[in-house]
Length: 244
Image 1 (cartoon, rainbow, N blue to C red):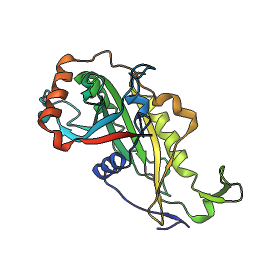
Image 2 (image 1 turned 180 degrees about the horizontal axis):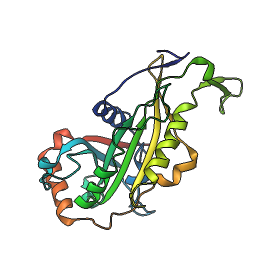
Image 3 (image 1 turned 180 degrees about the vertical axis):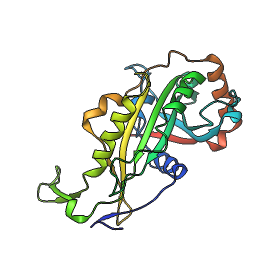
Image 4 (image 1 turned 60 degrees about the vertical axis):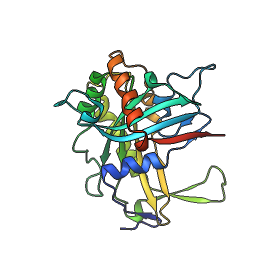
């Protein structure tokens, strides 16, 4: 259904993971969508200029203990500078998709992803993040808002307010769980217009929760497993090189 320039586009979770990775760029050493987690080790004297990203890695492919959650690592990111990879600063992400509808804007995902995220902590990944993507059904045109562009006040933008509403609902749900503060939580709305251009919406109320810091349960064994997985599966890792 089209609501003026918004269209309904359904992507499965695996497709959303691929979409985010494909549209993630590295600017000045900052990795879009993930930088609040991947940038944790950076200092004035220590920077990254590229990242290697793999998706949906099965536990057995990383020789992690079987029978535990998560069953796979949705997104694994290894930072690097020139030819040096910093496996000890790798980050693992759990991703969930939420699909609120016009009839149920409070609709939750089947799983918040907290159990899987806690599993990543227990597995010993150095940095851990939870990503939730709200893909709302477009609202009826009467509910759309029309606001001037901050770049050009003479230009009017059509704005769907409900993805922000869903994003804030999800933050409130996740923050009531037992996730520790060192997990980076990134929840945003993903919409598409009739030209198939994507629109990202975030809530400024919860930006502080996006930042992560090091997992106190970091495992040297897991770091070695990350290194081994990369060295034996380089073809599945996507390189994102710094662009200035």
